[in-house]
Image 1 (cartoon, rainbow, N blue to C red):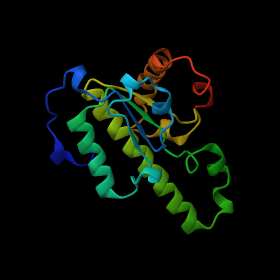
Image 2 (image 1 turned 45 degrees about the vertical axis):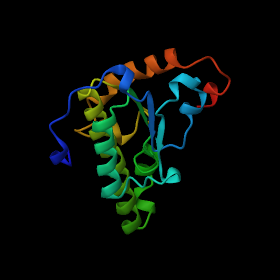
Image 3 (image 1 turned 60 degrees about the vertical axis):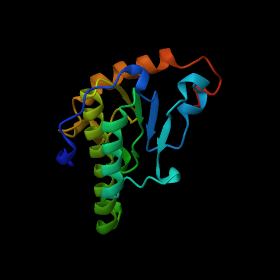
Image 4 (image 1 turned 135 degrees about the horizontal axis):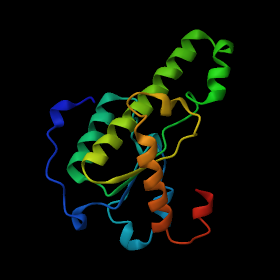
Length: 170
């Protein structure tokens, strides 16, 4: 994990002190359908909202905010374009420089997701990862443990979300 200088982790905050929901790599989607009381402290960290998580200072700020604010639930939706099965089947059709750059960006996103989800688990919070089942993410050594924990959190998220037509579009 990068940014080891941010460790050791602080004491886990009381549930009443924690923001309820954060989204990464996504403009606000799920937060929009949460009830008013659950929207307190909701954040969306995406390039559209000013967070370019390919830049190290933004990744450091994300880790630091995660440690200090300790949101209860995180939903990570790292871009899957560069790590999906289709991308790997088209590897030889792309210019090498572009393919390597896109692979590096994709790995940066999924590694950031794995580090932050690991932090989240250590802080006693829940997380969900929105990524295709056959994505290369699940084969990464730092992310392979995430699958089982993310499935539990996905179930919890579906139970907590209010029944709403907008949930079906998520």
